[in-house]
Length: 422
Ligand code: IMP
Image (tube, rainbow, N blue to C red):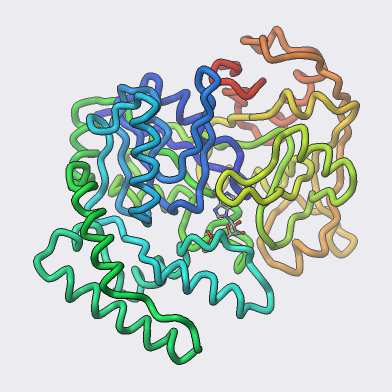
């Protein structure tokens, strides 16, 4: 029996998980996505083609890896079909390799409408992606969600009607436009036909792959500090992007988990609202945003940028049982003359090394920094740790000493091959 390698984001998302998975998937037989929906965006550049994936696991790009959309994912079928078409146009063998869980929940147009409506009414905005993620998970847990398998039931029309009628009552009471049942029914029956060949029971499929000793990778979406339980609630997403979500979103057991790769950038970023201790609201933050092209893959929003936070990283390592760190954008941070890393917080006059997501703590903590020398020069051709300049090595050594975790993969440029593997 083989074990699953898991790739998780350690901070607020956009750490470059797609790239790590793409690297692992080059030798993987199966790549799985467990949570979230098209609020996620993974960009992978191969042979100068930039693939922006929102739902399909980036393992599909290797053209020999089965790509599974697990039961924990919420699927907007329109977006998924667009993505399938884009991949096919680029020669990716989707028909051979894509598998969609029959138990994944469907995002319907009313979920997106509700997402916008609820965000509009919030005094403290979350800054959601407005992709209907939260309302879809609400329906799932309230047990009025529609799953992929429902599309193929003889009473799908009635099931859909019941949900739309309920939502329309709510929209009418608030003076909002109603959903058009006929239109939604028509489009979802069309989507059902297109998706049918990919739909299956992914739980048994995944376990069979492990039994057959296949190499399986699980691709996290979003990240630890956006977790509904362990993130900076309420400024979080509506799923568990931590290790627990990987289990419930796939049907894997804890015994199936092998290496857990925690992905970080050499600096940090956040999209949307919420506390962010190491944020830089000055020109250095703007410079990092430009150097790292920190604009959302999904919403194109400029990302908030700041220094790497090792206090938060240790929290992530602890929660997820991270065995290896994947550090991305080392080249980006190396373009600065000097840069900093947060080694402790000062809260109410006390130095602390323990991260908690208490909002008051996060809003009032002052980051304490250690400064490093930058100016790494062009490191995009480095393929071993030894080839890196001394300043880059010092930074990596410090992260390893602080966390007790090996930095195994190091991103030194945007292209697929710009990676050091130790
Ligand atoms: P939602 O997931 O659309 O409900 O958004 C909730 C919060 O999570 C917002 O602050 C989003 O910007 C953030 N978020 C959701 N998905 C991602 C992601 O993939 N990367 C970064 N931030 C995300």
